[in-house]
Image 1: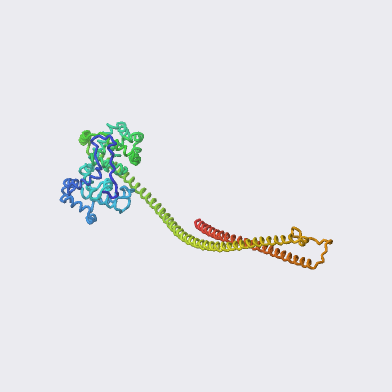
Image 2: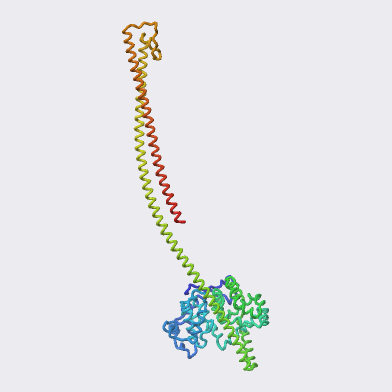
Length: 551
């Protein structure tokens, strides 16, 4: 279980040709605290630690359950005092200042980290809190709750021997430095000789490696690998990782002087392993190195023998002076590391403040843009509703115009039909009248042709012939008959003229009807065009207004 959902990043040992001594199954780091706490009501690490505690320890007479309750109870956390409280508070702000969980002053991460460090300083009165211990506690907090993190920290300090490095004026730590230099002499002799030439000793660059288990400077995903191996194989894994670091950096270190080498270990080496690929290669190399416990025991005996000889041969004053110089160098180194951490903290805070300011500016800009977008959305919705209303009105108007046009078309069609029927009837009457007139004329001609006297006055075409002077016209009957014929002829001509006049009137009426029909068709067409143009112009106007508002 983790506050941030972090999980242990374990090596895929199926891809590594690791020796059998370093093979381990499963996510050991993430399961380790559960194994500790589920084995018994009292975690083994705390049980053994309590039994090892000094007789005067205030926790020696308490059960582990009581210890945890006292250490993590809110009332006890407020009342309990620690001699290293100021150092703990100072280091808390320097521990992973860029990490989301620990960057907030007074946040949950810093509060939990403070509780664990203070609890251990009260629990282990002999060692108390040491600088750099907060990094190891922070790594554990990223994988488990406070109680389990405290249990695992006690387990690592007591059962894995990390506590021994802080005892007796760091005597065991100097033994580890000697073992590392002897391993360098065996595995990397050219780099060992170069360090001798530039007077660079192991305690000048490797102290944090042993005291903080690589947690202070290196990326977390690499630290998780190292803690996994440590929990599985023990503290000797530090030698594997240290030799791997020195071996992969050998070419760069051989080109440096004393100051350059210190700067390389402090700055460039941690940056190199920000790449997960480089970290994976380093862990593969560390797992493939075979460092036997027998060899480490041999180097430890050599160191103890050498220390005994030095103690016998060395004058006490010189020994104290040398120890004083060593402590001064260690103090200077710690002060330098402290300055570097402070500088890193300030730089991180400045960067975080800049990022926060930029984020606030971006948030303001996004809020303004969001408000503008919302306003545009409201305007667009209003425009949409307006266009929908106009569209409904246009549809209603179009429907009314269409109904009106259809009604006019039906009316005009009825009028045109009536006009056509009247014209047809007039045409039929005219044709009948013409036919009757022709028949009547033909009868008159036939009568004229049958009458011998009439033939003298009319030609075959029906015209009146001139009177020949040679003929004698004195008979009164003949005059009357002529007069009668003339009257009949005038009547026929008058009737013919009337018929022709009716024919002309009928043709005029037909033309008038055709003219009215053309006007009606034009009005229908004009009505259709007017409705279409009005609809089109309304749509264009609405589209133009929307375009201007959008611009």
